Image (cartoon, rainbow over all chains, first blue to last red; front, top):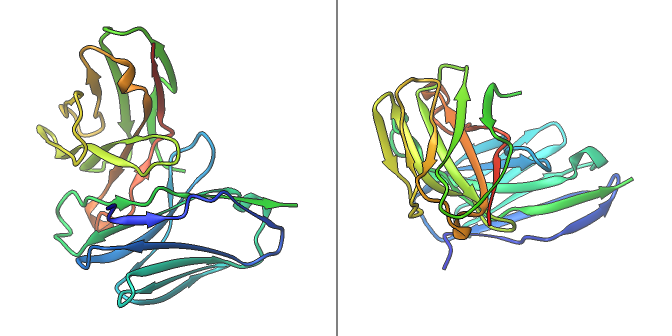
Length: 115
Length: 114
């Protein structure tokens, strides 16, 4: 069983819709939860990260972590065609900040926002 | 945009050839990583480096090797390419001040071995 499960989609929504992307995980040692966005023919870039449980908001993006359910979500409000990309969740333990931190990635959800 | 570069972007090569995928970053990051990414699959860590003259193998077994002679340069070498090596290879780097959570990725090298 994979440590991180992510619905691959593809997910297609109209412009302006609220998008919900999700990941589940099995390793209770994970403490940091990240969302990366990857445009076609580009490398992933970090959107936001959260520590432990709770919510974090950044503009139109909200990340939620529920450690009791081992479930994380990314919500995109007022979605735009420019949000069309693959979204990857990633996680890691607390570890040492000085170490080469190893991230465990989900397989990504491909999102298309239609104008 | 991240100052991390990968060359070549695309490579088609025959079985048995030796290849080196280049990765360079100008951000002065100590830690660098190589990932393998197949369509619809998660990124798999194949090598990482804490700094100059330090390299480690990642979770995914790989027949490739890496070197880190200079901080900014982290090349990956396949001594004898095989069709099973066909994949996208992503290089990334981080700096300690961000707790290593923000990995800056290059654009990737898409390798096809015939």
